[in-house]
Amino acid sequence: MDNATMGDLVMAGFQKLGFIQYAGIEGVEFGPGRNVVAIAPRAEHLNHNGDLHAAVLFGLAETAAMGASISGIVDLMGETFIVARDGRIEYLARAKGAAGPFLATSEVSAETLEKVRAEIAARVAIELKVPVSIADSTGKVVAAAAFTAVIRPKRA
Image 1 (cartoon, rainbow, N blue to C red):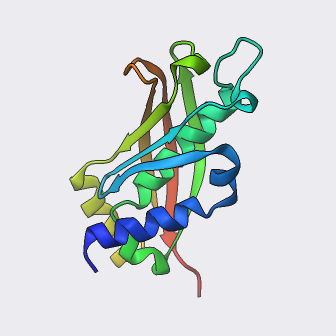
Image 2 (tube, rainbow, N blue to C red; image 1 turned 180 degrees about the vertical axis):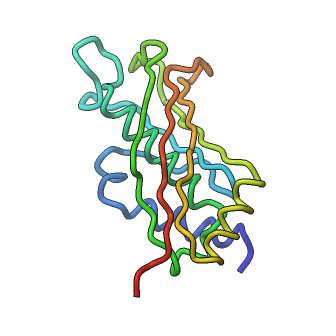
């Protein structure tokens, strides 16, 4: 199966996840080393200032990061267990609801993906740092985040 077809399958599965549907997060781009997701703010996403709520921004960032962490290993998912261990976010500017939609972009290098694949083949647990940038519709960065994805062999 080629990367485009595999990416389409992952995106279709992603859209079925309960949190994704609840939050209204949409997949924009998914490919080896890169994941971009978006959210168009709804009233329930906003805080008392009319900004995207901090928890919504965090959830959007985590979604982007975990997608990027699996982006180069989709064909190996049956052999691995993946979970977020931790996450950190820095709110850099107001995420004004009217400035949406917001895009969360997460990327890991080809070298990192190659190392992850080698560690999976060797059945070694990995902790992968995954950065995320969130921007509004004008391209203004409103938050920067980083998550640790734990990738380990599935237990027998």
